[in-house]
Image 1 (cartoon, one colour):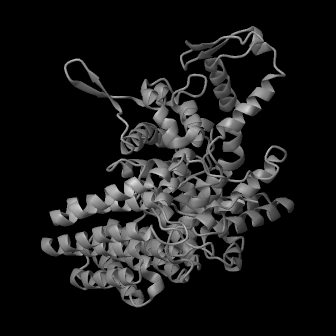
Image 2 (cartoon, rainbow, N blue to C red; image 1 turned 60 degrees about the vertical axis):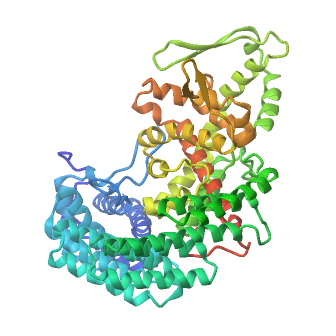
Image 3 (tube, rainbow, N blue to C red; image 1 turned 45 degrees about the horizontal axis):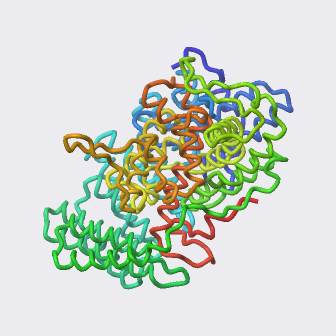
Length: 628
């Protein structure tokens, strides 16, 4: 902790200003809104040349700016913003003892439970103040009550969950923890008869299970009741969740036969989803095959009847034959942001607005579709036109240096004649690396990412839908990709790249193997060796599977020396820490998010264009509209 505060304010200084009026005036009881209010008050103090007032409101604004990640180990209150160069805003760990003393002094006086919960939790996370932690538990519970409502139930559940997690950290099984568990159980009882709250109940029951509820028998019955009702309504995705929830309760009760029965029912939901994919305005045998494959795998894992597994397997083979003509390259048709090259500020504002003021799932879907992979054919046309005005590259060669300064590759001059394919490719990736990808990152991806983390405390569970049903991701790798995506949302590109870059090879190999492409070699002595990413991305089947646009970006960022060569450089420890904080890392993270979103959409039943259910990830209409 720093020895000297950058704010230099005391509790008495805070009492000189009516900052609690800012909290009262905010229509939404959320720290993100309070931050905006404190910034306005700061600007007023600046106009009045009030130095102390500026420092007071800057301090309060910083406290509300912290971005919470309650899945993180240690202090959960990170910076509001992490820039591509690794610089960041203030986070809770930067607060000094004097800063914490000022907050502790006014904590008993804070009337607003949302702000009181933030201050008390920061005092606990940064100063290990036991009494403040107790106060935070109560404040989070009171704040949760402010967020009850059909549109904001995730905020309600999140505050309840933080309250009980804090109580458990103070003493698992102690009175405060048991009291919070009773609050969770009361919330379940309150909402179990409200049909619009199915996912809230699912989340609350998960919390109850994690904190040792004694009502496993009751909740097993409730979960099964909801599973059957949802299945009867044809809502197979939610039904599958509750069948698995029921299986979990039976495992807790050590009733393995009942747990197996419920897992088999969940597997049947996958089969039902698959059949549903063949109906509606956009039937898809490929999507049906994906869900039927999941049903087969789930049946096998649960130890289902071999005859039923065989029946589903035959159905899968039939659907796969039907789908041969359906799957084309992954080439979405996303309209360009208006005036993209002419007005940087307008483009950034449009990108941020596109993902703002909407539900988290819709925001994630829109983030995935804030851009489209590079149009390889169009990019080549633009490159050809631009190259007509250049002379230098036609008379001299160019060298590509690695991180240690060694020559990694040489680009020969074009001699005013027609370039060979290798020379064209090298120059295209150099242009994309220096201009195209950085523009996309700075004008679209980064503004949208920052807007999302300003509004949402993004947890792993919020992103799970992107990976758990994806036909693109090898089984068992979902958690790695999930953590990499979350790290990217938080701007931790060092962690994100170390998690995600190796997984691209697994994704490419998995997709090719599903198309019956042989991805290994047969060496002398009958040794089979898997091809690495450098080889996989150069296979013609890779372009057939992913399309030329996605392949252009993957090759350019990961394996091309005149691109970024990120895979090879990182694998050989040639990149220092700051080298991961660059546009190519951010673009690759977004591209993987886009692929996960595409995989998710391939596994979902087409929905109407009328709007998105508040209890489910957004439909393609809402999530894919262009920002204006």
